[in-house]
Length: 397
Image (tube, rainbow, N blue to C red):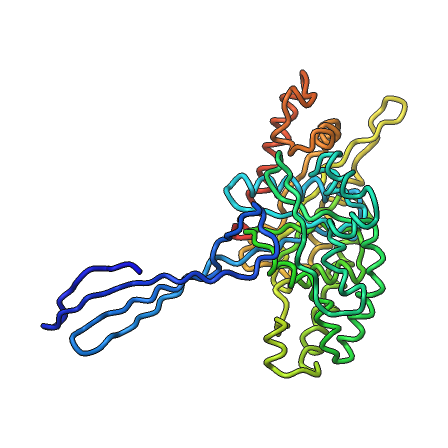
């Protein structure tokens, strides 16, 4: 208890005492593995002790909510994982705690962020990989139950300065279960919507300022469930014909299931207290969560030493804003510039980063950066920082 001293109020002798109470959200795993995490709510109780009575004043300060950001496109080869992991490092360097959750069955983010000795140990046998990856979160759901296992292991990525919930190739096997859960939710079953909202439960369980979800190229039930638990999403694209179709598909796809969510929730066979207990929101944050798109720089092709014409690529690039129109209804409130800019095609720098498990801006000569690559690296980092600066503004980070 803290004594705030004495005061004189209208002739009454007043002494005030203040007590601070910290409330912590259930933390299944803390990024720094500390026993104590930051409070999600701090209540100051001030007791004014007057001549005849005591008066209590309450003030509550809540910490900022965890921002869950999904990097997603239903087309592969657009630099999604590289962008997501380097953005995670960028945000971590601002002093925020960051966790990357690898929800792509290809587990590319896991392989980029973690040293080979770490992830080879994780995956050395099936039992180990089941317990030490995102599969553990879903083990109850895979067995038919509704809740998650929040006792997850987060692996440090020293050079990215983040922690990682490792992915697993068997994530693809959860698609059928989550698809069935969505159908059960649409049939008014409480268990179905609880399973569909597993990522939302996971976000509440992990104590971090920012959670980055790296998703695979799919419009399936797994990605839908992750987006249902996310605050924002980013769509990296390339200047090609199939990326244009992908942008249109994403907008139409989200529009269908986000719209049905709100109407289906009203029909769930559950009391209002049950909906509150299991944190079934009336609407999903993601419907106001599109933070924009980045465009991967195309590589001019050569034929017999001659550079091919690139007019088609320029045309595709110019069509991206129009094809992204369907996503504007989901635009985040602060997303003034949804075109985040061009992400450079970093050529040999990417394999160096993969081998060193390092963000692009942290690569050194010890990692193999040589000669002209030094200037190239600086140029790439400047371009990435321009994209990240716009994205940060759109995310209010």
